[in-house]
Image (cartoon, rainbow, N blue to C red; front, top):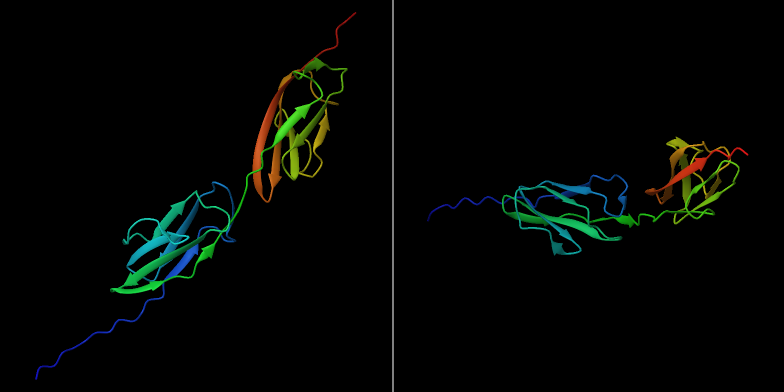
Length: 178
């Protein structure tokens, strides 16, 4: 009788890593997942395939929703295996607003106008590109000390390390001479 040689390949260890070290991102932020340990890969988001089995070992997305889990099925020499999943926390981007006590933000230097930001946890105000202090929960600023010119007032709002910016243009005129 003939001798038959059989090669038994080991089950591979398919490993999945994320480009985001803590797996906490902001909505629409790009994350790149990379698989190792195989020669063929197929990525899944919540068990939904993200393409066919192929030699490509990376998957890039900006569409993850909060709590979704990415896994990868792979094979090496025809032996299949599946990675552990990576679940990503996706924080929403705040919608920062900026309102004032002046109807059109055109006024004279002697007027005191209050500006109020909303929609975020912390705020940093910029007058003509210059920061008015470190980010903080303080969401108001007034026109005291603003320059006599036309300039942008910008506020950067932050919540859970996600940022949004809004800007209003302000014109401050010199007081009329009597």
